[in-house]
Length: 76
Image 1 (tube, rainbow, N blue to C red):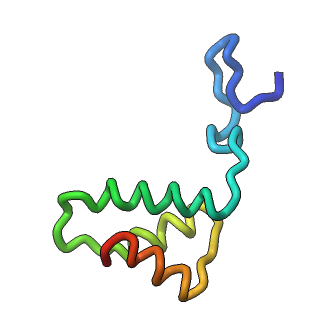
Image 2: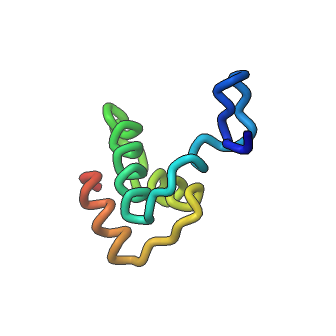
């Protein structure tokens, strides 16, 4: 079986995210949700830095307008 997750023996041979083919919009929605959870109760946390790191880790780039809109949704 060539799936990233072989249920027969519980062995994961690849990243779990490779099982889902989300488009960039869906990925950004997930990143924003992750950032919202990470920032909850973290007064003084740098939302821009966190968002930039998560976007980069996802292999994405955002325009200045997209970054501003995402930061606005994070309340930053």
